[in-house]
Length: 220
Image (cartoon, rainbow, N blue to C red; front, side, top):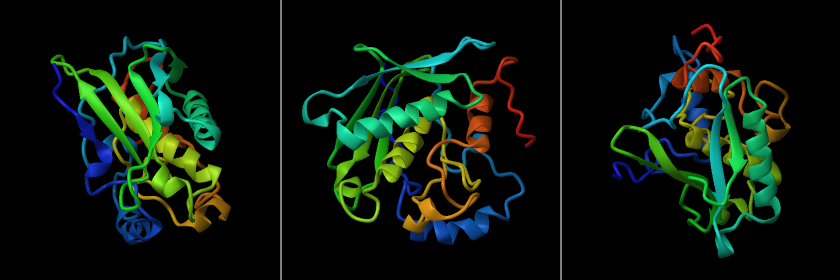
């Protein structure tokens, strides 16, 4: 039974332009506890089923067909984003399957829309059954955020939602809710130079999918 047909970025916490990040950062940096697993805005509607222990949380994905199929930089961005999550110290991993429950695509969502969306469908038992991840070509094809860095940044963020993450108020977590300024990519660490998950993102995954095999060692 479909309980949720839901897009994260329809909330006011969507991945937006850098000005929003700058306004919010002053508040976030003063927070006593700030982490991915605190779910800054809205908790995930349901996780994927996971057996725990040292088992891998494999999310089987497929590519949307026709004009929605990721090609060129979009295909590269998705591949790099999947690899960036695989390389974390978490059980999360993506594997291709033609019948996979996670669909990855690109589409024109409008210049006023979010940079990406993730729609989640859950069953009556409270588990995720399918997701649709979309990168917005209207914003990522041209302009300040058209580089491959930002396509991967958006893909990694949306795949975090696909895994089961909400937004984080830790900077520079990939699950921050706002698109950083375009200067971010050329700024020295920790304020820039990354477009994949970092330690706080790992903590979020290991909290939602808690087990003795992948403990959240973030110290929060």
